Image 1 (cartoon, rainbow, N blue to C red):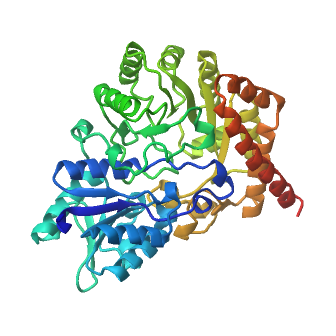
Image 2: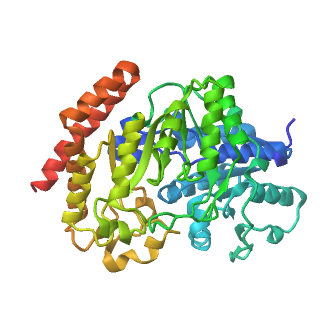
Length: 483
């Protein structure tokens, strides 16, 4: 019989694709949580029996998740969530407690890290919160709970005393050497990789996998929450990254890898080493990443040779004024150079834009759309400016417009902040819909997709799904603008 004190279930809150992606649910992402896989591998290395549940990929209901938890009778359940899912997590915690009051519910993730005291004060079904990077904190916390020690000595947690007082302990330093963490526990992810899919615009082969090769971000964008990993930029070595590629390629037959780092291309020396070694290994896996616009043609050409087929760039705006207000530290000329050089190297590009930034006007939004159409971009995505707890914007944006601070609304799917120069949430959504229509309903973009589909037939499936979504958005946007 297994020792309950060593068993911990790690999960995300149940949420349908519609809850997670709204109108674009049909092209949404169901990739597994690497955060849970890292936690599981570290805990297993230290003698625990972690079990991962992935409700989103299997469309599990609350009852489904509770039934699976009850079947293994854990002492602990860990729930990781972002701000938009906080009340989903609260409901799950309540149902866990209803069925087994003896289970300790431990929560973590960006929201808990950003506002630990407020989260624990508002939601009584959470027992303990893990703040920041979770591996070392969670292991020490479980050790302490198992032996009956005083959890006040554990750094990096927030908890509720018997009298209801919420206490936060001193924060734990970041993991300096990321290679001391074992590879993610892909083998504990149920149904991996066949049961998981990348978002349609990011997938050209199946099955797909995802990796993270660094932590921390040195940039200062006002809309980013750096609570969990901070600004201290730390890297896995090229050896570690190559091992991740090999495991996914050889053990799981993954054919398409997404590198989730925000700053994968920032460490140029390491990037070159990874690419040279992938070429030497005759890597047959295609991969994509996000990147900063400060790139050069030599690096891009090397990435292409190593299997990179797509880069997503955080362009954010076509207005120099808005870029400065967002602290992006990039110019329109630098953006144009990065996209043009990527195209020259044979790499497809996605442009990520934000609508509804503080100080943004209708003219600024029009400049963003015109820039997207002018650049040789292959894909375009415009999401709502969302001031998450922990970001600089969260504490300052109300002076520039109206801000709905309800946590459950913070999912970038709908506007929760409306800058003073714009009339309403409805206008923002209509302008967003029209922007997508103007970008995608052009002969050049359609031809680009059809040409690409000759090499990768899966693109045709993605095109169809994307077109259905775009047509729906187009008609909805037209109705809003003519109200």
